[in-house]
Image (cartoon, rainbow, N blue to C red; front, side, top):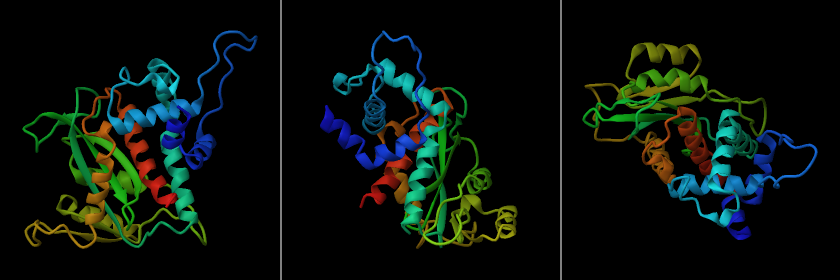
Length: 268
């Protein structure tokens, strides 16, 4: 089991995770009872569920903690926004190493089917079936900087402002923290003048495809990286379909997938 846990949660990732996980509460200060399951084993089990796509009940017992314990730990950490904080910590490490290229960023979204629940809606591209949508902004090399979720019936243009505002201040190799792209590339779903004005007001140059003027057959010289990142997210099989009723749990799996993508670049 130790080899499996170390493979899913390498030492470098575990060190970063310990910086953001809330301290353990001592429920039985007088002693007694069963020993609390280790956080590293629980984290490895959560990553296994995210990447394999299995249900919580199908979690193999090889990790040690029961699936109920792993799920409770996942829910607690999701409420504490551990996954968003972990993603930001990994981005800080990448920024300090000079691995983030802010010169050209790209924005896009992807829809997937979902069960009924908050932040779901009829998908206009899937015969009105219920679904959710993942919104993301990536830097020039495709590393996700900002993430969000919504119902599948939410227009892409409505996600631009929240995503740009949601980019955290990230460390740089030199100088102050940065959170503003040099230039933002987007497809025709974001072709609105008020979005262009909003970006210009914040000093962000833009390259947004125009409806009726530019061919939709070409992905673009710079926007293809965000499409590749969407395929990387699909490597987290739990994101092939939204099974979580609670939106914070669905967002947690999106954050886990983004963290794993960024951590792979950090350890190259």
